[in-house]
Image 1 (cartoon, rainbow, N blue to C red):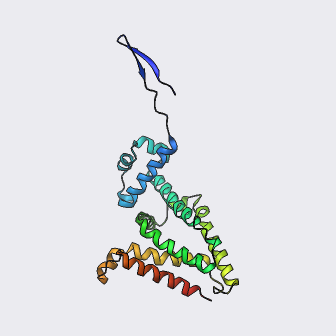
Image 2: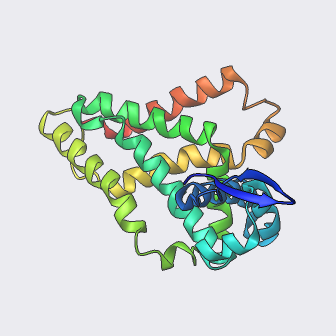
Image 3: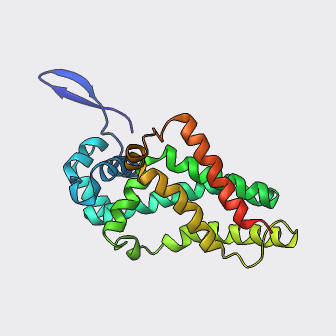
Length: 222
């Protein structure tokens, strides 16, 4: 869009064209800001005006794109699940030997929780609300099912090769891996206090990562 000439008080000047709207960019900025606010304050404590300020938008635009705070929280949860699933997909686990694939998956999961503390906070918030938001999602199963299918194929390949035990439910395995990683980081401050250790220290994180990998691979071993 080009500038247009404007004559005012006998002087002709160029008037800058109105900025083109960038709906996808604005929407993404709102989601990023909302993720930060919901992770910091939970659904109940989060404020729409703070989200709008963080995003450099106004509340009218926020409501235009997302409807209300509850729907915005659902969009944040879907985006959060999509992010971890994309990162998992980028591991190309099915190109690896079964044991190597599982080791890499557990290692990734542990480090993802460490590097993305907002994920833990958002999960805590949604569980306080008994998953009422993601239960409304038409996409949540579609987003999350590929990782279970991939784990199932790796487990079956490992069983055929004699590396893994038989009859391992991939969903149960995923819950176990996520559970032992999630608990550590969701309770990191209380655990550090009662056991007198800084569990976020580099040495402690490395020790815990090795332990979690050993536990999972030990269970899977044929």
